Figure 1 (cartoon, rainbow, N blue to C red):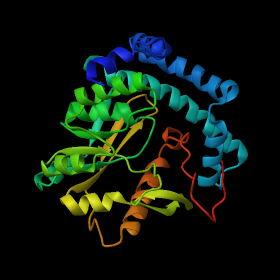
Figure 2 (tube, one colour):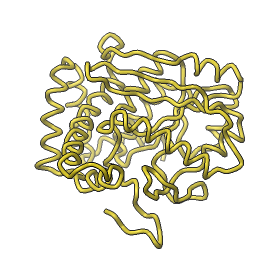
Figure 3 (tube, rainbow, N blue to C red):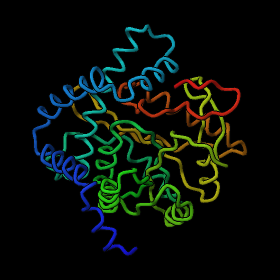
Length: 302
């Protein structure tokens, strides 16, 4: 099927709800940020108390990762997470459609670490994780410094089509997450590539390793990619502040990375991510089943 017929198929009736939803969010993107935050709190309350989208998953993840918290504290954190998720939808819209003047205030800290990594000439992996601020953080970063990124197509083909277009618009190059050769080519061309390895799946490049002290399928490919290319690994995290501004923090490139022990390297990355999750735990993507499908000997926690 050619590209034109693929696009025409997206206008079939079964996809009209997706187009309608996107149209609503496109209009909502024009609202002031104060109103977006107010609506997000309402949507968060609704999703947590009434619709209960993945509420059991969120609570299970939080109980596993923060066993020191009381049940009241855990539920309060889960409730805050739903507000963060809802606001993240508006941030996605801003990342895709908003002009620069309509973006919320932000600051970039540590840009010299990215520049130092690029000066080595072997590309930079901007190592990050799945936070609710991921999309707007990428937009902020792309406006500050040219960068590429990995992307994964959502299951809905309408949203996948739109996302591919936005990735290509704001990122250069945009590389599919399964395209290892494309990623290696981009790094060897000295590109900076946005890369979030914290949602592991069973593969040749995964092991069961601790995340917040809990065994989880963990991606160990970062070491392989760094070893193949010599790319610098520069951690990058976007955080929503209490004054409604955003901080993009780039850290010094990881030293002595990779080693000969890919599992130890992956644990090191997990601990780095844990450290930044603890700075704003409600902003991490807890709706993901991080501890699923671990295999024989591990309980099914969901």
